[in-house]
Amino acid sequence: MAARNDVQRMDTDEDAELEINLIIMVLLERLIAYEASYLNKQPVHDQTYTGNQKVFDMLHGHWRVCFDTCRVMPEVFMKLCRLLRDKGLARSSRTVSVEEHMRIFLQTI
Image 1 (cartoon, rainbow, N blue to C red):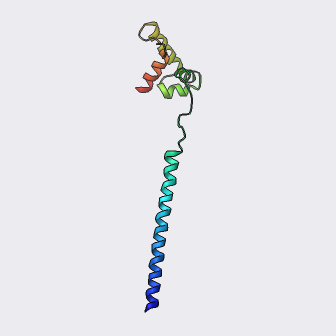
Image 2: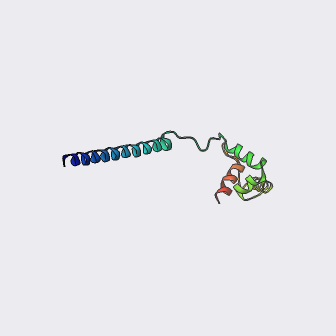
Image 3: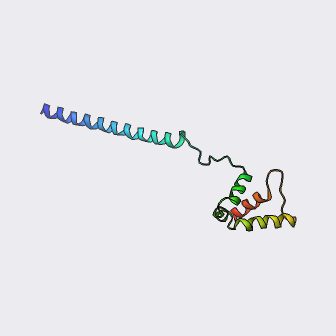
């Protein structure tokens, strides 16, 4: 009978040790996932564009970029900006051009 109790105690001790090891492994996995998500950040937007560069690339790159961004062809976008500027309905500020204003507006609506 004593041998049976010893075996049961050993099984219980092994189960407890296995459970502790499992908890430690889960905690380590969560710690690694936390570190990967929150401590080792990589920038998503790593381009150092200015607003003028974005507009220039949009107008002088593939026509689809302008169409996807503003829903107009590059030629139409330029005519719209020129028309608004000529009629005095839009003007460039020190920091933002009419083209940038229009890109932001058309991208928003």
